[in-house]
View 1 (cartoon, rainbow over the protein chains, first blue to last red):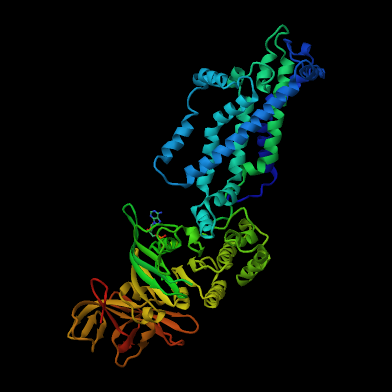
View 2: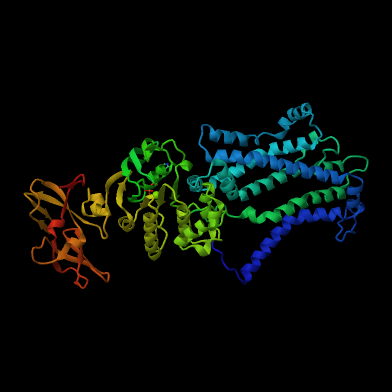
Length: 280
Length: 349
Ligand SMILES: Nc1ncnc2c1ncn2[C@@H]1O[C@H](COP(=O)(O)OP(=O)(O)O)[C@@H](O)[C@H]1O
Ligand SMILES: [Mg+2]
């Protein structure tokens, strides 16, 4: 563990200045979106900058009243949560196997799993369209759940596996001599020890799923399955032209839940793995 | 409870030897200590007994039953791991209770058993903490408590006291021996600390480079070492090993002459004599050299003699003092002299 040094005076001030500047830089687009989302449409496309825009809830009313935004939101949330659950149910045992048992071809299998991420999504777009059509799943959130889960499964497995590799083997040996079976060991020892890794993987999967566009557009053809990300695209078509303030506001709304989730669990994201389990 | 036989056990990982040719018959209720330097195969041997490692060759038999194919979980051994292996997400209480839950011991007994084990290792105040919030010594004691919380067939302890300070180590040593005698559970204990081995063991197994050098009671190991490795490993300071030649019953090295030795050996010989079997004496002296160092420790004084280019350790009287580089003479107790083959290091009798 790195030693904590007490910083004083200038050096502390400098540190806050740099970190604060960086935070502002990173948050700028978000604040910009919020600012655009909360001004009237007329103040958006102007050649001269407006430093103090008029506050307006036009876009807010528009997205909730003219569009079934509640349903899009619900679709997004269900599809994403469903896909993350599918991922974890499949990835945890897979990662356990890949990290803990020795069998022929284990590392190859691990690599194949990862390699599914390496091709361009467009290559499989058409086959997947037909697959879901034949299964009668087009335009349903079930299809979205499955496709998000499929997209994220490989790296969720990979992240959890890498956390599992960090667990000292002695921990499992101890559990074995204490009389625990494999499932007990997985449930009572391994999963709690890699919880930070599981949470990290789940959050990243969530973020990918929220941003997923291509396959969602392919699968969803009516508001039955539209998600926030596809809804955004809707504001750019039609007779009204591009509705920038609505786009910005929806984008901001899509950002908020992710932000809240990350804030809520951030102590798990950075926490040490197996603190106190072994010597040293 | 359990007798353990290891028959012709070998362990290899590809070209790497962990253990070669281990044979030992551990009696029921016996306390056996494996002693040897780091990397000599102690942990590996213990892991094979626990069922955590399969021997490449040989049989492990417990109470007449071949155990090679039996899972670790079904062997009913309790092990203290060298690296503690405490479950990081559980409190110390939960850690100690874990084997009770896994072995289906009635729930209403858990609390009393955990508390008793924690008391034995003086850890009752820390039961609510997570392992991360304990010091190394406390973690080690928690690991010990987890092993002694139930009554298994066999205790396996891999350097369970290595991280405790001297005082606590002494106290825990007595505690472990007491628990073992009380519960009458066969115990295999691994250490690289010879004092631990001497004080705890019914029998000591000395290992080096994966092979057993000698098996014997602490007395036998100390007074009747099988080779120079054992002679040098046991005793503090260790036995003096002096290379020289033996001719007609007389051993000679620079500054050293010892007569009256058995006439049937000759040639290059290593003579062994423990520091406590040497006395500073002009009369009948075997060694004449110069004083190289004097170390008073309070209850005794260690004198280091230089003869030729060889340093020889002597346990002198507690108030012995001498200036450096003066001439001094030392006498060996003739009944306490050991002879070893100059090449193989094997004991000559
Ligand atoms: N899993 C393993 N793979 C390869 N070599 C190993 C493995 N475990 C132990 N060894 C080797 O076997 C030898 C004995 O190790 P060990 O039993 O841990 O020694 P000790 O406990 O006496 O210090 C060492 O040389 C070690 O490097
Ligand atoms: Mg070891």
